[in-house]
Length: 483
Image (tube, rainbow, N blue to C red; front, side, top):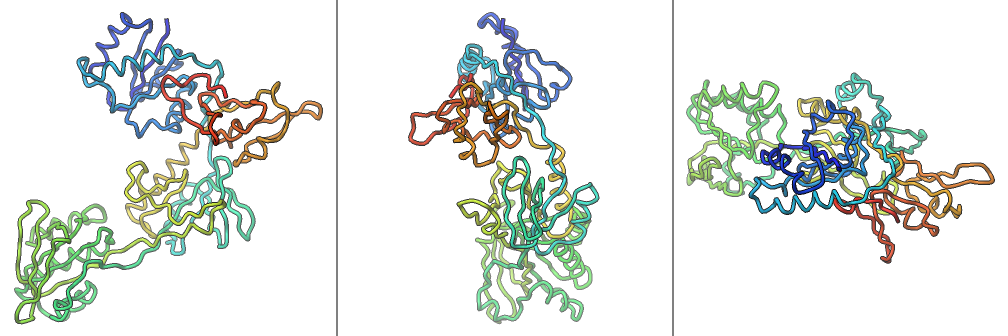
């Protein structure tokens, strides 16, 4: 009887235990269930097949290989199933789909090839890209044992196995990852009508701050406009302190109309609560519904908006409008540093939920949220540290060369874009060998080999197409993967 272990990467469904108790009456199989956290306590894992269930975003090949490396599981024995398609109960219509999947898993013939997932350590050296880098950021990386390399333009970057190779005027440097430190420009995006500006009661925050120290705003109404999403912490501190001073010293009525309220870190929450306590009105609003009009006597402006919390329209007369600027990231220019036939102008993932916070869509590439040490920068640096601690998972023996079939035509050597093909052996019997630490499983060598001497186990290539297409074999297709 075959044995199957279901590994839950997320929440274990309540229906699974009664389903497992009766499954052997329907299928010639014994099924066990473990949560991912329990895998390490149940080694060795002597099962015929493994089913990984979890959110579809967690079931990408690299993550599955990483789990296999930690648990010493052959990746060819793993069949992923998205948690979104799991039944909610034994009466769910999705149960038939789940049972069909299990049936296919049981019947699928598996390759006898032993593929081993291995975590490879990275060179603990990082390249820091950016013109304005605070020394405290460099010290933070150095304190946890990183070597820092700051390439001087011009330079080029290319992938070399699991590391990155940087070629510059100073020579060739190998790094395990790249950290980009952003540059910013000051921005205030909400347009102020000309007739409102003509009231001469519209100032930027710094100008208004200087005016507060020189004059009294007794019982006047001051409105701070904060339309930007990215506002420095120091600006919020100034905003809370200034608004509290106006209320307590001058009995002024103060409004802070903002896109987002920032209260986390650097004593901001306390300042925020103190401002609210003395009477500062802080409202999150949609700035597309904000209307500004000058008063008839041109001594102030009418402010109209809709509150985000309860959708109530408000309108009042302000004596002063204070523009609070934010900052905008200047995109880093990648077009001149990559080797390749396609220029990359930007790597920033615009609100893409598939990417972890602070990371870029390239393994080992990260962008810091600020060019100086802040709480958010600490979080970003910790994410870089976690990446280096995990290492990169490679699958040993997933791509293999059949020595008997290899005619040493060197086609694979010429076509591999990752320089992962070596020639080894004596002068009488040399053969091609795949360096699994550098192999990216793109399948180009297998599809171009005229002797069909290369096999990618667990992957299949369609050779009848004009251009060979590699596809992952998921579920029932995860078989011997012969080319």
